Amino acid sequence: MAVVTRIGRVSWGAILGGVILVVAVQLLLSLLGAGIGPGTVNVNAGSEAIQTAKNAADTSAAAASKTSFAAFGVLLLDAIAAAIGGAIALQRRALGAPRFAR
Image (tube, rainbow, N blue to C red; front, side, top):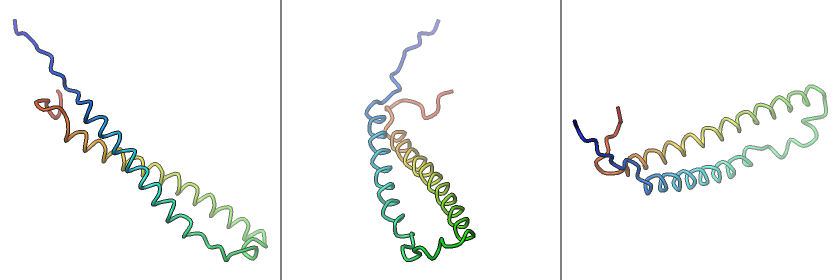
């Protein structure tokens, strides 16, 4: 009968490093988005852009579009940050552990 030894395949240092990297990348990308976002708003549009009902409808449609685009951007930001953190954690995994367990 073969004796199966249990090898610690979890590198908590790699996990903690990955989490810290995810939070740092997410913070940096959020700050970048916060810096770019206000630059895309036209402050000179003023009340002339919303005087008619058509312009008001166009404005609300544009606002809805921008909101959905912002939500997509946040999800994309989270995915990018998680991918970077996961890649670093994978590289720093415990020595001797197989890359893919079967």
